[in-house]
Image 1 (cartoon, rainbow, N blue to C red):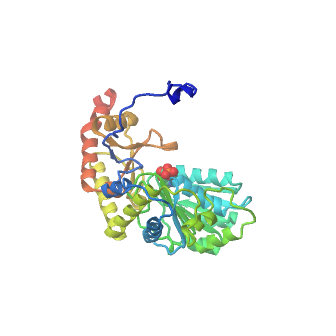
Image 2 (image 1 turned 120 degrees about the horizontal axis):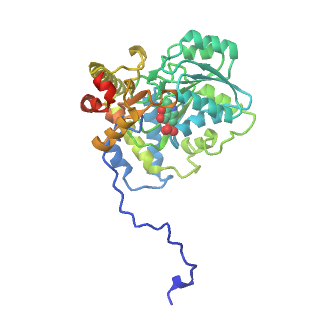
Image 3 (image 1 turned 90 degrees about the horizontal axis):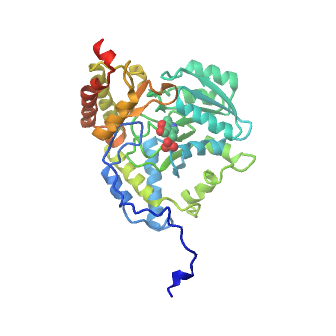
Length: 394
Ligand SMILES: Cc1ncc(COP(=O)(O)O)c(C=O)c1O
């Protein structure tokens, strides 16, 4: 009698004979993820090693150093959170917001709303300053809200992926110092692609993601915290109410002690190290120029074929462009067509812009002239087939 005959019988209904995995070839020109750089993919596929292996511990320091370069910061507490951008977003709030703290959130798109939702879950006294989606905040608007609410934290999105607006940052950090509050910045769609200066802008808390300007797959959320924010963390009256994201615990692993906190996703950090190395090799100024040049090419090409852009040029993000869907066109069907028949992903609108815009991303590895030409060509040749018959005959 074989051993298995003593085991209870196994339910086989979920046991399917799937084929080995092959993912389809896609050009990801939506709001993210972007395609990963081939060298990053190679790094991801290296054999894993232990998360306390001396080789890995050295690699952690390299990732931190390269992240400081990418973010232009000297912050000691700079590390990639295990999790996506939203995990790092939550970490900024979980560590610094105590119940009853006023958190003033600037909302001009989808991700400002997410910040407000998260702050509320940590029992902040959430105050809002709102603008139309597609607009940016002026220094005057921010200052009068700071005077009115006197918050402990001001949260704002640098690169609003839902609208394609790049928030001008000069002067906001000075206002936060003047009114004694921390400045929290979402840099998910700006890191690696758009000029970004954490220290000289006096940003106290920032987060990002791996899957856009860094040319890495999703899975890590870069996080940084200034000495001012560290002081607020040290002076908390209670524990950080989120064990996994508690930076004081995480820093025992990422700081000099190197003691176990959680089993790090070592291969994701191999990929991140390679992505950041490639960015440093190119140089930030070159990467920012490349994104700007290719975005301008995209804007010119789209406008040449008669399409309109949502955001005025002075506020446009080089990494993400919002294109108004012309009257009479089913924007969603067009995206489905591009994906199914051409292997190209373009995003639709989120929230109040759903059905009104397409979102075209040129981020990291994908910000290249041949991708701009390809997407313009597709809009030029394929879009006419999507005009409704009444439009076409008008
Ligand atoms: C501006 C912004 N903030 C936050 C996030 C959340 O990041 P993730 O989806 O990686 O959790 C995104 C995602 O695209 C984003 O665009």
